[in-house]
Image (tube, rainbow, N blue to C red; front, side, top):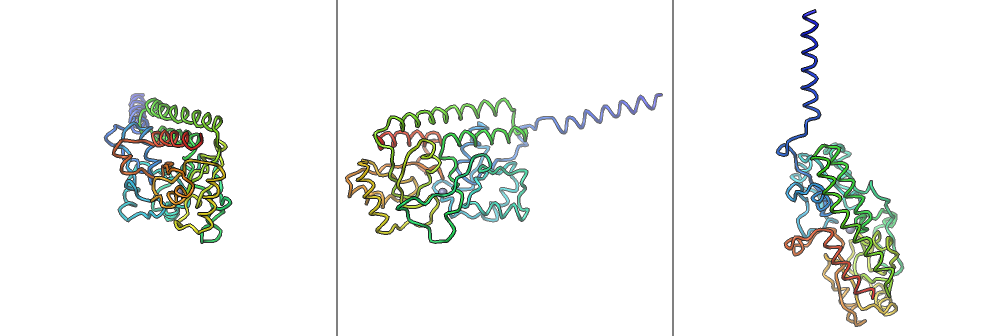
Length: 312
Ligand SMILES: [Zn+2]
């Protein structure tokens, strides 16, 4: 009888120890870093954790995510991370390679494209086609440019961090909601802006990573190159088409993205008497925006003002 009693006590003690190991929240100090391959994953994870230093981007400000390849040191950084967030499009095929080779673990990886409806890249009339063949059948990776998608992505990061017990669930929820509230407010304002606009077409004399954005609000567009095109030298026909469309729509604004030199936009604007403005894609943050503490929602605020001018 006595041995049985001791056995029960030992079992109970073992159960308490196991429960402590498995269910005790990890103290903050032991938490690893969250690594993101892009600015957008970093921005959203920062919003959810509420800690700017908890997430590190692999790309420095201004760097182009389209030509990025990880260094051996970057791979080690990803391996050591508690969570690695990536977009999952064509520009990041290096991540799929690392996963296939078991260099990184899929459990500690979050692919953002899994949480939205992906669209195929579009080659719009007058747009410069890419040189490689079969490219037009790729999925467009710029999923975050739609504020509605951005809400889905923030919530996906919140759910993953909650499941990992990264931090207190309530805190993660409150942080995520603060950010998605701002995104939802922007979404409503963009919808109203386009609804009441004089013009519903934008001219982007640049790459066009805004497909998800324009589709969301029913905007039409003309652009020089598809979203992730490596080409930056437009043909005479592409330039002529943009000038023609600018005149046809009577627009006073020609857009360029934040990462281009804007030469093409200036050429089109000079001929048609328009002005050049920046439409921010959020591929990365510019050094200027970073030093003024801008977040992705602030870039969308900037876009809101630029679009108000272009559409009215
Ligand atoms: Zn891109």
